[in-house]
Length: 508
Image 1: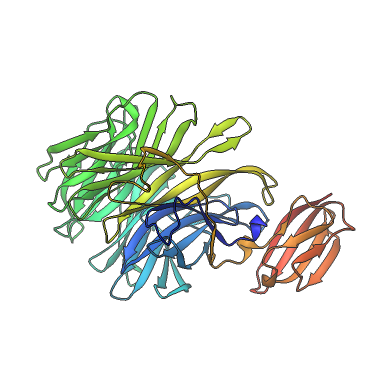
Image 2: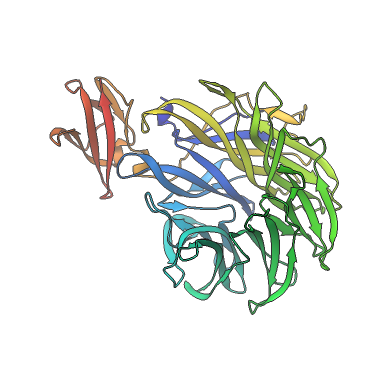
């Protein structure tokens, strides 16, 4: 049955053994998940992902995530899953000297905002042994933490994100400089209402570079790029005109100039790319061709390639098209270092909903491979007519991994917009999990149910809605007989690791 599959890699255009370019979708047991970042290190690829886990009340609600180690064909080599954790687009920091990884984000609180940043540390050859540390601003007035970016700099692990001040209801950027697991520096940036950091980098002069968006009351947003020296003193600042809401993801070119994703004047849904000189003048601007009010293009990442070209990722949409309706789909584009658009490619799959077809997804990150190919990761949605945990229909986000050649092609057609439709199934080890993948199905069910990952369960108990134990099974098998039960129940699983988990259950 489909719920018994570990990781299903589907939608591949050619057999992976003979074709290096592909489009794959990773689906962990039909739970929602998507990729946030991809980092190459010593020939392997480390992909940070976000997932939704089943919480202690049996609801598909809890935020969780981790890292999946891939080879260059996107086959899974190792993985982990961290409960009550939420990551971001720049959450992976690799310490090459100590051969370990920092996975940053914020701690998840059920039905509440996060109140501190979170760092998960583990060796690259031991994904399962995870050390956690947490960081909070000294003032209790700063709440609602949203950790956005991290980088290693001058023996510091830099954590940057935002938090809200409950006194003036202002959102500030919050930065920690962590040294030996202790905050060495803590400071905030506040350029006006809602100062949000979206990207952090280190330039060729070893300055720390922050890319901010800044909302000004009753006016449009502006972008701010700020450089700090090794004493955390400001040495350079650039401010954009007040344009709009494109998130200012950016990076540095090899010649020291900066590029940043910007809003296109007059078209609030379409991003552009600006190149900024050291004297703060604009070297060039790239705006996409054939833009109109029915389109949207948002840029979620920019990088420079080995030959000097620039690659960007994000999402594309065109509401003028009827079949399908390209509302938001993953897209990738390539520019010359002088800002000339070389190509752009987008990918989609149809989702059939009760009210018609819709497509949804995005690319969040991309890396250049040794041979010049590009590997991009992100999200692409499916739709479940019935989910056994939610007990209703729901959207089903999946991880999208696409490897193109240097021209953005995955096949001989090399279409601008490609539908992912050919399938191949390949099983691979799933992330190390416990509670998240232990449940009874189908739900609602009838006389016999199946228990997923029954080997994790020490004892299964089923309670009536009045609290009476109607069935108790020590070390349950895969098949659970419930022929004598009818109505609504709560199943409680005591796991062998000592944790307890509950699931709402309907038996006809």
